[in-house]
Length: 387
Picture (cartoon, rainbow, N blue to C red):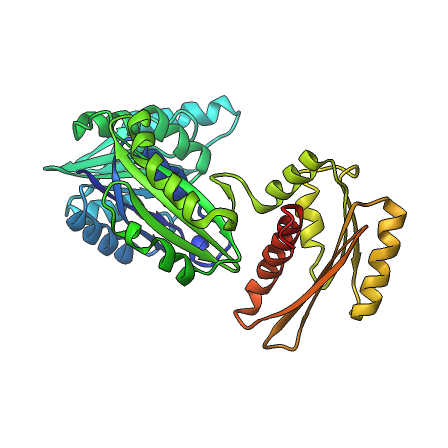
């Protein structure tokens, strides 16, 4: 079993200025060739901390892939940090400098003197050609261990993963045609602990494995199989997935890439129904997400900035239903006293009026997602004739 760790480098990641999308891409690429990832670390632009993190990762894993810190500036310290890991100097490579000059000339630009830093590699490093950027990537081998340093720019990193890294790892570690494949089942209105009570023994399986990921008012179940082919992985996962479907039934709203809002729109289209939404205190979250999947023929919305009473909301729902010839109207009001958030929700159709109020005492920042999931699950259950 080949084990890898990922180290993303950049103070801008720690400060939240940019989102780390590289790790997700690399993790999925390694998963598809059967490489297990044990840890992900994010480090700022500090040479000694990067060195320490890479040393620790190299002791635990066969492969360490780091991204970022390969630019020309002083705060791009990855080359020096990797050299320090192996206690070797940085060595200038004239051919790399010529490649950089050619790259700049192609865009009618002149490199500055500090760009020459990018032509230095650890003495035991091997350059990875980077025709889509100016920063040469590289790898270093020590026995069965490998450090691979890739640019932090997603487009460059992805290109090098596709054209070099994957094939290199397959050959170096004699990776057979093995993949790690995942299947995700989305459940709603059922907490993580309640799900665990129902499928707990399945979480002890070794291949496929079963794991839970909790969100506000939503729990995902991930089934992951390792096999020599996609067909074999599917065969391993199928009975487990089918058993989860059997046990959780109506709590499941979708699988894999299906979102809750996409599932609701699909149900509306199948039943040829129009939904109207009146929401207050939700920043139009429900309307905006649903409209990504449907036009005005299916979804009509109204967002109110001010707090409204239950009776006012019901009156607006009735007016909105008539105005838009809606088959179903969802009314939502989310309010907060600073500690607890309160969701009032109502559903109106031609035959009935249903309403419900519930409280959420979790983190304020999660309240909106909780309310979104809870209200759309009510629509889902209404369309399934469960309420």
